[in-house]
Length: 397
Image 1 (cartoon, one colour):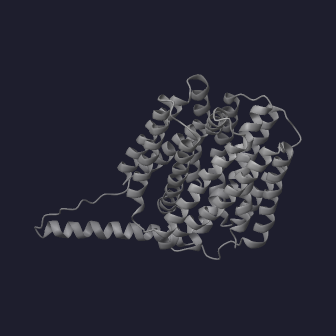
Image 2 (image 1 turned 30 degrees about the vertical axis):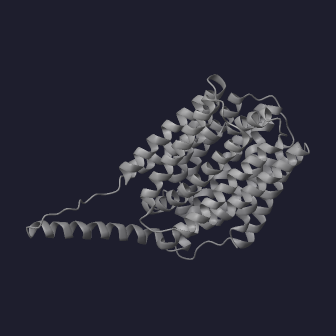
Image 3 (image 1 turned 60 degrees about the horizontal axis):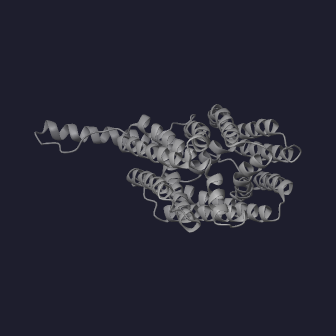
């Protein structure tokens, strides 16, 4: 039940995610301006993510940061309805980004500390699947608002949904009484590594040939893979609403189809979370992450190929976006679980920092490439960076 507030919060941001870029273009913002707005917000959110993560672990209080995030988002989204100034919208969006990430690290820790390590994948999958359903409904509201030209009303709906999330979280969210699960997992990993080392050493001393190798996970490679995956995703998806809008216009379809396509993209994500939760298996995350990253690389290459031969249509683009949403969901479940296992207490915000670094760079680079060189190069660059992320995760595992 405690997830219900997050459901309404994600519903509001699902509506905002597609509506805001289109709204910025409508009030005179260029693609590069959208990139600057996203990059500025994400860059400011990077130190904020680390700060909120450190602070919640230091205080061992998580609910208050979730409430701060939801209430601040509701207030700032209401302020969005009072202006059409591009510069002021950028400032408001940046401020909202800093305060919005206050709930991310506390939410991850809340899940990790409320369940055993064996249930982390399933718990993260259920949370993400449930809230992604809210995101999907928000996209549906965006489709309705776009069809009826309810510009100001859409922003106001975003604000009200976040206010509802605040009220529900105030009642339903509770801090865990004991915070020890991540520490136990860390002790277990260290003990298992020491035991395995002693076992191999004893075999060698007994004259046996050791066919196994004593290896330790490369945390640097894991962090690099996360940042690269986020970079490629941001390059690909920041200008994606404009690309999809162009495809829809070329097919002489109404603008509401843009939202409908992203609803299906989100639906692919919901299915991915459901599948990841039902097939969760501790220790299987590492190979799955590599496979899912190379799959996204191939989908980006397919988009580039279709662009080259002018073979993209609404059904084809929709199918690819559904598969991209599915792949992202499976990746996120396993990456979150591994991050809670690998990243020590007190640095819970590091996951969001790494995602933010890649997202900040990509949110500027994507629109810049799209405006100056075309979407073909957006797809090619994303494909290459996804492949580099795959290499990083192979090194980690």
